[in-house]
Image 1 (cartoon, rainbow, N blue to C red):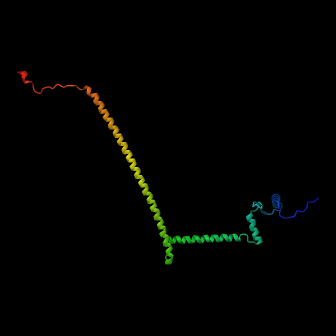
Image 2 (cartoon, one colour):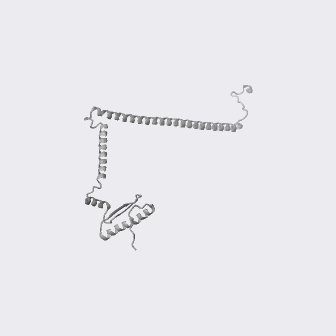
Image 3 (cartoon, rainbow, N blue to C red):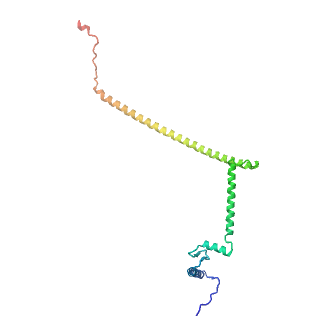
Length: 211
């Protein structure tokens, strides 16, 4: 009993559709490999599922780009013109912008301005003045930071000087107290050795004793 014909239409059941896709994709890839080996053909196959997943095969003896180039030459269809045209337009636009910026930069440097109309010099002058104002503003901010840092350093220096002087004064006071304590200690040790009375000897001999 032979197989019945399957009506070729979209499978509505998503599960059955995915199963069928997996099976037939495998079969197509298998056939592509077989025809490559059996017939020495150059085959390139690209498949996208409904979910956007890509499957591909290309004969080992070639590349996809080369096959597309051969297809382009054989069929005469312009596969890349639209994309290339967009890229060329984008490149041209970027070149023009770069050339314009180079000209503006030369004008800002004071180069190639002899041929400019006086009205064309006005925006250049305004741009230079704005740039100069920004530079001066940045310089003022830098100077303010320097002055602020200088004041902070001066305050730190004063504080450290005060602490140092205070420590030196404390050290001097301690030394003076130690010296004073040592002096009184030596005085107490020396007093017991001194006599309590002295006998005064006359300078001149006693005349009454001679008589």
